[in-house]
Length: 377
Image 1 (cartoon, helix red, strand yellow):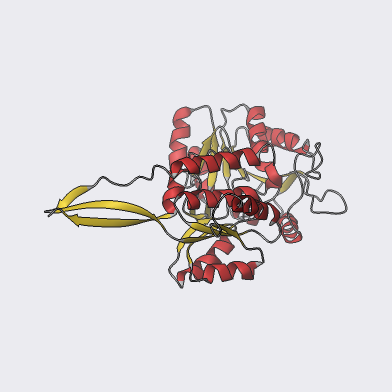
Image 2 (tube, helix red, strand yellow; image 1 turned 120 degrees about the vertical axis):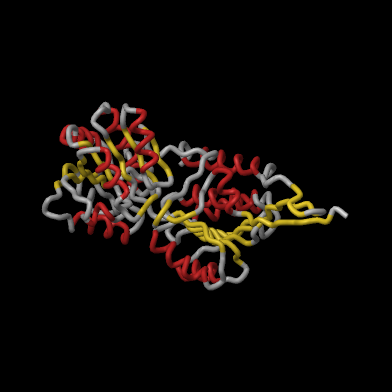
């Protein structure tokens, strides 16, 4: 956290602190005789932020940054298994901000539901599963609250036959197993050209097998456990229900007798209709499919309900541009996977939700637009 998460959190807060000073709007002009019109961007009011357990501090920062920059107040509700860093953030904020600007309420799903239902809340921002986002949307619709939803991902990784296999496998491993794969942008669905499929699967599996599953406090560990018993059961259940045509190339088993540790896993031989391909895994598991041409690669990538993030690996720049335009995902990386920056938006399409985190686009999401017309007489 000290090396990877906190520096990015600081950078995000600094970005939004600066962005608060230059909200943009259309130029004032005379569209009706004797009248001048202009636009005001105003805060929406009280914003409820519901954050997940995979990156509790970072997700809290992503919500308070644009909300405060736009002039709103915030009520944060962290996941019940990871409230500590959010409470610490609120304590720090209380030392420098007026009372009531940043608030934290801890509790379970019923607590979150009560916040969403509360009439004071005018915007609800949720980072979580598609199921959770759908439930929040239903509840918020009763009061016509604004919604900002960053939901499940199931990221495809398109590997063409002109790449350096070892280098590409290294990049995919880095994007797949970070935080034990508990990342909405994790490089989960590898889709490989048939000419290099077998060689790439072998390289990917060999590199994945070198990773060490261990306690987060152990320097030797590359990633830690799954967050809770339910998530462990969900991921292992997907592995237990694999179809007969699936091949576990490496991993697929528990590590140790206690805890929720799972070995880094690669599963090949899969088809588009398989459960483990269509569902977001959210664990240290990579699936592999093969494709014959560019059109099939794009079809396989887009053939799921989620649309958050994706990547294309190729030495052909024209192909990279074509495929990035055809992919139905809110983020596309070319010859990389998972890098984020405060200046660029992060958010998805389809069942991955709507609205953007980070960037000036996020700031706009936390404002409302008012037209003011004044007589010139």
